[in-house]
Picture 1 (cartoon, rainbow, N blue to C red):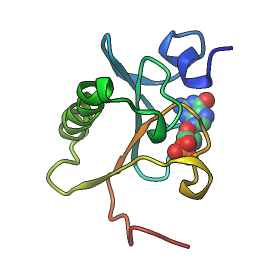
Picture 2 (cartoon, rainbow, N blue to C red; picture 1 turned 135 degrees about the horizontal axis):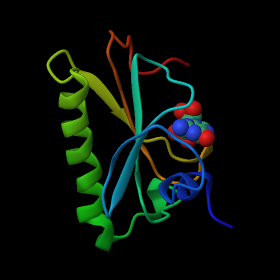
Picture 3 (cartoon, protein in one colour; picture 1 turned 135 degrees about the vertical axis):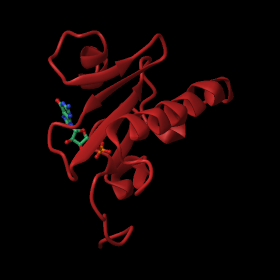
Picture 4 (cartoon, protein in one colour; picture 1 turned 30 degrees about the vertical axis):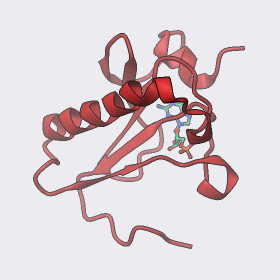
Length: 114
Ligand code: 5GP
């Protein structure tokens, strides 16, 4: 069965998609933790950061160049933002389809709250 984010990539589930090409899709988080909160996901399923293989290096780099461009587009590049990938239980991962969070638009506070 397709993952939640695979269905968003395939446009089978609604999402506010801000960018899509043949490798990645970016859409606004349904529960934004900051004024700007965008998820950038590979179009193909990679479940966690542990599942990245050497052949994915260019794809993973692409997630970051898309994040850079979206930060500029959203007007948060100069003031700054945070890029986050959560992995597995201790990382707080909820959706098992690798995604890069782009969060910004306000001061974000300390990096980790426990
Ligand atoms: P994680 O904790 O796995 O790193 O983050 C998963 C993120 O996906 C959360 O920030 C959550 O709000 C977001 N999310 C979960 N379900 C949906 C959905 O159906 N649509 C969108 N746009 N975001 C979702």
